[in-house]
Length: 203
Image (cartoon, rainbow, N blue to C red):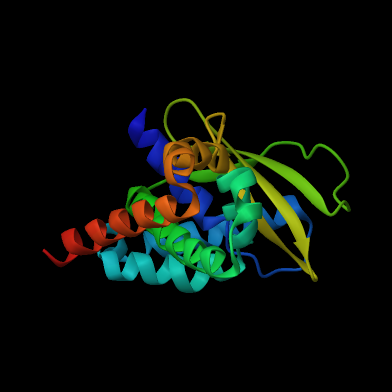
């Protein structure tokens, strides 16, 4: 189950690449396929080269994500009382945490393919949910995306793996720090976690 979850996360990261003016479901299928093919062709990523993985996520994926919206959904009401400086620092640490959390899943991409489920709702709406199934051997893995219109294209601001939306998962993780010490406590916790990952990588 954990391996399937990692594979689904890898494809979630792949589909965050938003650059085409197209229908939302076609966009998800096209970009997921493009990035999965790129990972399959990159032996350094497959072998766990952290620098290559993070470069792919940071430079190709995250610039096309509505990162602030993800942070707001993950933090909840406490965001409204945060100062501009706190919001800036929290967004920066969240970005690094997001990379650290999901970049390793890209190494799990092997022979997976993505199949679209029928699009529900109006494809011309400003926000849509696109449902997919990650197909390999065994049971398909459900993977859904929340997209918003951004200019002529789309940006993803949340994704659902096996029934759990990412921002709901983050909000649950962040709740204790926000309750005990507010935004500053969460910033400190994320900073410590990110520093720990950076130290482990150097070693």
